[in-house]
Each structure stands twice: as C-alpha cells, then as structure tokens.
Image (cartoon, rainbow, N blue to C red; front, side, top):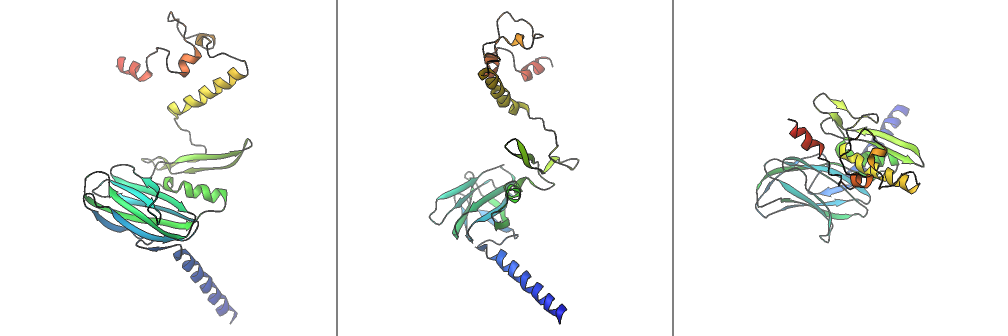
Length: 249
C-alpha cells in the first residue's frame, strides 16, 4: 500500500508539472512542434498564441526558400520585437512577456517574395528567477554544438559572480567555448584602449597631444608629430594595416 501511494503521488506531481507547462501557451503553435508555412507576395502569416504572465519564449524560423522578417505583437498590434537575421537558414526569435494575454507572431517576406518556411517555438517557460538561470535564458540562442557562441562573466564590485561559456569556438573540430576560451577581439579593443588613455589623462599621467614616440620610441620619425589624439581619432595619416598587407602582396 505504501509503495502504491508513493507511485500515485509521483504520478500526481508529474501530471501537475505537465499541465503547468502546457498552461504557459495555447493557440496556433505548440511548443516543440514545427509548423510548415507558405508565404505569398505581400501576404504575411499571423500566428495567435496566448501566453501566461512572465513567460520567456525561444524559437526559430527555418527560411527554407524565402527570406522572412518576424514581428512579435501584442493584442493591440503594437510591435514588441522584430527579428531579421540572415537571408537563409534559421532565424532565431526570443522574447518575453510580463502580462498574460494573446500575442501575435507575424511572419512576412523580407521583400516582394514568396516561398516556404517552418516555425517552431522550442521553449516557453517562466522567466528565470535566479541570475544564473536568467543568463542561460538570454544566451539560449547561442547554446548547443551547432552555433558559434560567447563567453560571459558577471562582475559585481570587482568580483566575478558568474562565468560560463555558450556555443562553439570551432564548429569544424567541435570545440566548445569555455570561460577560459581566448578570442581574437580585433577592433573591439579600441574603445577599451581609448578609455584607458582618457583615464590616464584625467590622472595627469599623459596628454592626448603627446607624441606617440614618447611611449613607442621605435616608431620611425615621419617628419610630422603623430599624437595620441591622432591615433584615437584615426587621423594619424598612417595607412591601414590591411592596405599595407595588400600593397606588400
């Protein structure tokens, strides 16, 4: 009898969980089920769904033979979000709602075009209540072993509170991204360098009008002073590295 009671209790809990997940969404689309569609010229397809309050939605549209734009609208037809990624393949959509009600997902052709597509809501779940789970939600589209991703760190008062890796650093060799993955950040480094120089100027340790040869004496004398300000504003007169490489063959 005790075993039977435990099994029955487990069954009730399981059923309650399933019903709760189902109650998050209803309407034209079902979570985890792809729906095929055909777009005609200037004729968008509209899916109506009813979402529970504080719901997070993650899905995708497979652009089989047509480039699409996906818009999320509330019951008053106000656009809440719009997605227009690559012309082919998967178009990722993520959005969240705070109020329970009916919402619309509008799939329309990018230009005067027609073709086939399929749409799937992969996840509909409550907005995460903890920072770690919330970040996992926000980076859901960069997760998995088929997409390039990102490494993230959350810093508070100089202390790393959370770090994680999402997606792949190398699709060909199946190398995932971890918090210690090294990236070639290229021009992303410029704003950090410029900001650091401004901080040093504020502390009186340098001037934006200083000659760069004061700090990098190995730079040749080109006959005209090149300042830190010139470098920050891209007005040094020096050729771009890619142009130099092209000229060098």
